[in-house]
Image (cartoon, rainbow, N blue to C red; front, side, top):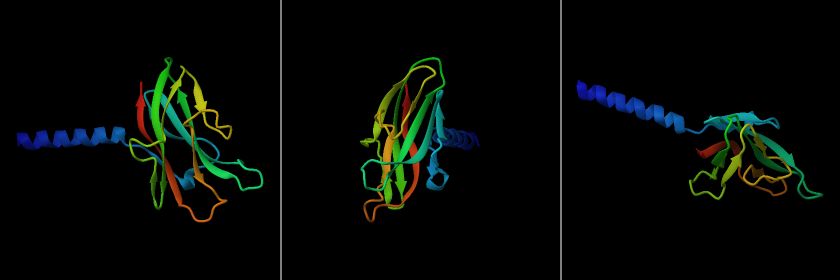
Length: 149
């Protein structure tokens, strides 16, 4: 009986710890041009939005995911993370060694926001190019591999 209780306690602890590392996903149908909170860890809030940006004159605008990162603490934070895009055909940026992982330093009480100016590396991902036929079917976005120092 003692072993069973110990085993159940261990299993419960594993499930709880797994939940704390699980990454939230926002489905395409929930995305707007307004930022929607997707994750919060250690006083850092991640939000995402989906927006069109006119990149090339005479072509349709490209569709992007932008990330807003808010440091709600009173100390500077270094934030490592990746933007993963889920498609019906597979996932882009879902492996730990993905090229879409980035590291940013955010001052106390500051916010970094991605937008069509593309001034901050790692705060945007192109989702779709309506100028090209075919392509994958976008389903949602996740913020993955979060490490806050």
